[in-house]
Image 1 (tube, rainbow, N blue to C red):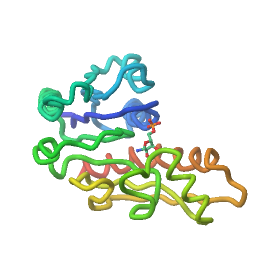
Image 2 (image 1 turned 180 degrees about the horizontal axis):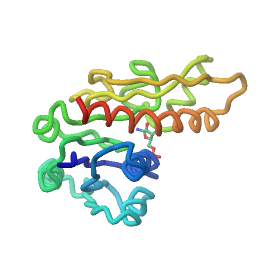
Image 3 (image 1 turned 30 degrees about the horizontal axis):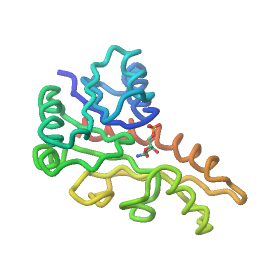
Image 4 (image 1 turned 30 degrees about the vertical axis):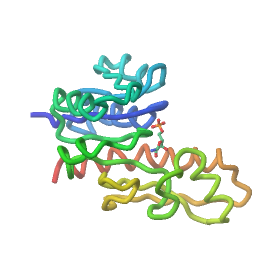
Length: 191
Ligand code: GRF
């Protein structure tokens, strides 16, 4: 039986798309059974709709029972693997406890550098450039209670060029993410 992946996203969903494309090309023998988002009107929803993938919108407003609503959606989708692909909400303990070891996150830096609270999106790339780093990259790690601190599963480096803007660096890192994420998912599902 095909392995079941659930993706959680809050933004454009280009990493989500990289999983879809890898399934379509036959690289991944799996199916995305659901996309879960925390807000409406985002690119990830459009990508899911285009592919006929069911979407659950689970907002934190009201905050009441956010953990239970999220867990219910996950349980209904019965995932073998949960992928946080740009999900900008800290996962509730209840969810982490229920799926410990089965949740991965992708982060746009070489963790433990530039990780933790406040390091997301362009903030990461701006900091890398401000610190005159010559290498950056992306990391895939298991999700635990602490932001960006779970065991590291895979990393890929990219060069930081002299005079790079944060936008240029972000683009380079994102394209590394699009390769590393399907490769790591394949490794996890096959071992
Ligand atoms: C990626 O840079 C990822 O590392 C981070 O959020 C971004 C999501 O981008 N966690 P996208 O929505 O997949 O395009």
